[in-house]
Image 1 (cartoon, helix red, strand yellow):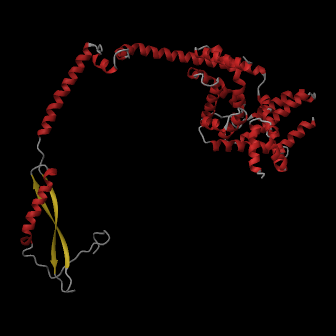
Image 2 (cartoon, rainbow over the protein chains, first blue to last red):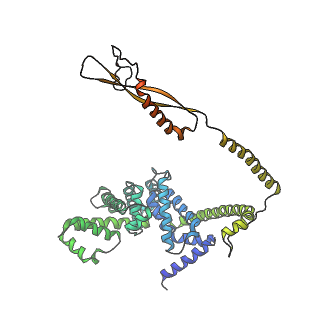
Image 3 (cartoon, chains in turn orange, red):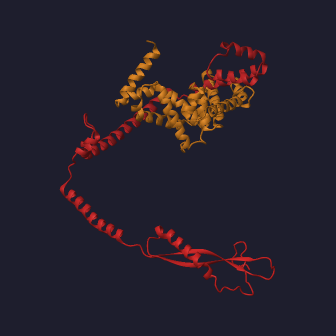
Length: 209
Length: 240
């Protein structure tokens, strides 16, 4: 039995225990997949506080619905469906109340905190700051998309879902999904490509130190 | 023949799938043919590689997850408590109302139809007496009223039948033309029976008598020397 099989088997075991109202078992499942769900939420919401709230809500919904899991797919596939539905429902509601307060605010704070370390010419600190600026650029590029386009791109690029799967999950046409993904790629390319201003700034920033 | 649009679509999908383009010989050949496509591929490849690095960048530090999971555990415990409360409430309602519906619960060997007619439900005596009394009162009020209503005769009704009568009007100018005026005369028909049923009979009788009386009905009619005609145009009745 491979490591992957062991993981899958223990997923099933944990789900069975969660169905018997074992909160500890469900928390183990959450520990296993919380980072993936959080990252999706972070890219989708573009705000760490919203990402935390939304990902916590996904887990709560999953716990309330765990009795309906029929073991006909992997636990993560089932969880991803719940995640997408939660994202889409929040898109319809006025959940993202902190839209103006994006990652950049937090990034600047982090930069200030790490300033001392950074000026000590630690290569690790330089890389961190470079990555954070890069992340900000990507977040800004994704911010120019509609929530549906952003979600389509995240599911295609980070989750590796096919257009058909995304269209089914989001209840829209394959053409709409493709359009969203390509639009996202266009935005990212414009922001991050070597000839773009943003990328030039990033490169200069990175090479300066 | 090289098609830039098609080539770019193919390598974008390959990059999104995280595949190595070198494994696709056809794509490699296409890229070697077109410098624009090759540079576009390099740019896009670098862009998507950069976004892939975001996973490690956007992930919070390890100590963040301790608080995250403890918050999640609290939410789950609270949700479970609420769920238990609502389940207990539902069970209490079930316990209270359940015995009433117990006889209708499915059992092996008997059909629902058979059980419906064989089932007896215990009802408090005052309630049963009140229901029977209410039903008796209702019937005693409704049945005589319905019988009386059926016996009531229909009142006499009058209908207005319009019969057209053609009256020749002689005019001096122009001599060769006859102006025909249609006169409508209202006539009252008194019916003693049901109007709907006898309306056609009354009309046919009237038409018959009218056709017999037609010559006499015009007896003594003289057109006046000055014929006054009222011409109604365009639905404006007072226009002359």
